[in-house]
Amino acid sequence: MTSISTSTAAFYDRSTTDIATLRKRAETLQQQIGGGNRLSRSSDDPVAASRLRMLQRSDSLSQIDSTNAGRANADLTLADSALSTFSDYISRAKDLATQAANGTLTTEQRAGIGYELQQIYGNLISLANSRDSNGHALFGGEAPGDAYSVDASGNATYIGTATSGDLALGDGQKITRGMTGPEILNFNLNGSPTNLLAVVKGLADDLQTGTGDRQQAASDGITSLAKGLDTITTAQTVVGSRLNWIDLTGDRRTNLGELRATEEDKVGGIDLATSISELQQTMTVLEASQASFSKLSSLSLFNMIN
Image (cartoon, rainbow, N blue to C red; front, side, top):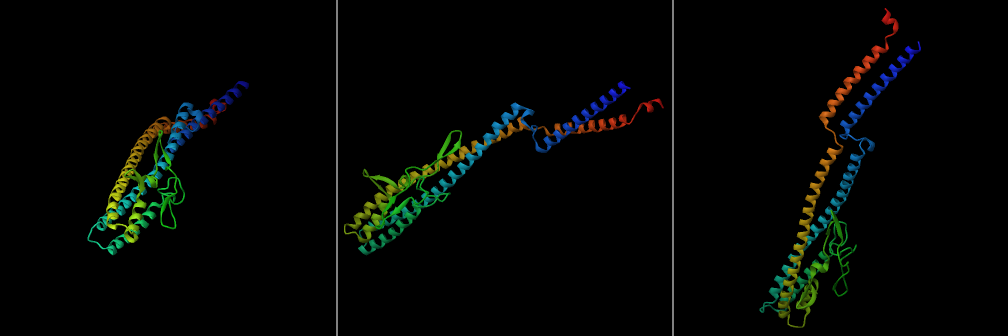
């Protein structure tokens, strides 16, 4: 009797274990098919799990770099648009200076031109104090407020920081997200430092209220404005180059992301067709095992005797 009891217990234990193993395997396959991953915990494959963590960390850093690139692109695009408007204003001021340099104009006519230049000067101040994508000074470097302040006499003074901030683009690459007011408006004229705002204001004042040779002041203004226009054109080239660099690093980041996604799929992914086939096979064996166990467990020694 002891032998029979032991054999019966062993049969039940073995059958229960086998069925439980099959059920667990089926559940694992179902989870893998549903989630697309073959690893549910690091212990399933420590080496693969470690590699996946590294790849996922790279993905997270890439998202940060992408955000930085987006901000830099937005700020530089705003700067590029503002520089185009600067160029338009200075071109108009240069045309007005050319008209004022005409010897046939009267003092009153030159004063009228000076008034329009004064309006352009006000527009230039507003443009110089434009805001970036975060609402800070577009041409003020890291300054949170305006880039230029204007005193009681109407003279503009730069109050921003010396440089604009850098943003990381990944792989050790970075980009300066903007340009400061002095970088786009300051230049040297005959060895002396000056800036476009001072040139336009000075010419506007000379033509309206100046006591000297207003025609000569207009002629001198043409030269100064042409030099300032060259400075703006150079700034536009710099901004355009930075925008192109952002595009290039963005393409590289996209390509690296695709390579990581491919590797992640190889390291932690599943072959869907193979997994489905194995699941079907496991379910078939499980059903057969349960049916066999049910049939065998219902038999007894008396059945065999009869």
